[in-house]
Image (cartoon, each protein chain N blue to C red):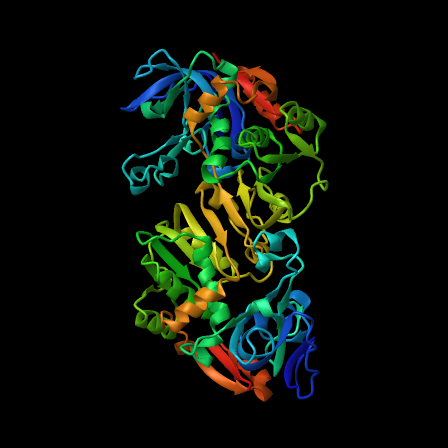
Length: 314
Length: 314
């Protein structure tokens, strides 16, 4: 099969072996896949990954309970037997591998495999394009699973990249008083189009937000969040960080600021919201490439200002 | 009056001016005061403080509603008028000064002043010695105000200095499965005497604690807390940090670890627990000095392994 493979170098391969299908797993023929910032980090050495990249996809199950159906797929392959799994937190399983991220070949290929319980069939009302956003939208929704955001709260979101734009829309659903800080006209226009207030950096009152959602993934973002949040407020970290950031934990303690974090989220809720058109994902698509040009797709996705890049696979 | 004054150098002064008493404030004659780690930090330049040190004390009110009564005193002098105060969080008032810490002369002197609403009269069942622990015990209790610790949870506490020993006792009150990690025989003996399980560093299972209470105040402590906490667990930061620590926020996000913080706490609860003898503070007292020897008291308090040092003032 065709695949985009990273093993110290990034290489498109026309004849990569089709994955074997372990017991309980299902072969999925990939239709489309999205390039995520995590993919860009992995090819810089993050997690020491080698194999087929990609974890945002829509495909067709070949076999299993959903044979012939369009599916999205949860990316964590949990053991199902450890205390963490038995406590209902398979996404935190210490024995897990992760599709296209950690020791399990991913979605930038003609085929992938996932356990049958990871697959979510998609209603017709969710387009193929929209379905590639189920995984990141689920991650955005996890913000609300961890942090209770109420309609009378002032919320500021910083870091309006792909995940930040999805998270903005999700946070706006709560009815809270949300302001997204955006440096770029493109993002500002998108946010305003969704009815979300925006501000430029420096325009928002400091120490005034009940909740700051930090989608920046850099230490400057965390420092900015500490300036914006009010005493006893919450900073929600929605993205991972490059390296080991310095963080003013003393300021957090003195102001009794609580720091929430979240990662992977509920696929069923993401599919439900996409089916209802409650979240706009199509406007984020900036480019499409065939699988043969997946290296070019990765390069495009790493360009400044480019939002979602899709691979059209099959 | 006599006072221990810090102004770039630490100096005992026999004839420091007795404080003027603003409208609404009360003059308090100090009986005893405790030396806190914050005092040791202030004389290294923390917060750029200058003035009379000291914020843990018992005294007698001279005037006001509690005239002639023994009192403990809350250390934050809030404005009472800002949105934070009106929201019921005077300890987070952005306009506050703080007794012996930030622009308000403290308790290592014959007299101090505080607003009448900051004073808490003490029942006879709370000894003068015990009363000097009301402030740090209240801070320890704030842990439970911010973080719900339930009897079925595994909790690990690291950093068994003065505040850590108080916090250990407070956390143990919840009935949780508490282990305090202690390097020193003195602390280990105290903890075991209170019925608290102890372990040496490295003896506790990693990724297994529902809650880790970090009383270390250093970045190694935070890194250790991240190792000990389980996915979706809570790290509670109970102390401030020297400098700007590096913190593995990515690990926190990936494991969805929530980071709680707390600072000053409820005086009424601290007094109630001391009155019931529910917390042992007297065992922490290692030395006593007259006010004239308060510089020596500070030096003693900074010796390795020394717990509480009291000043006997009047």
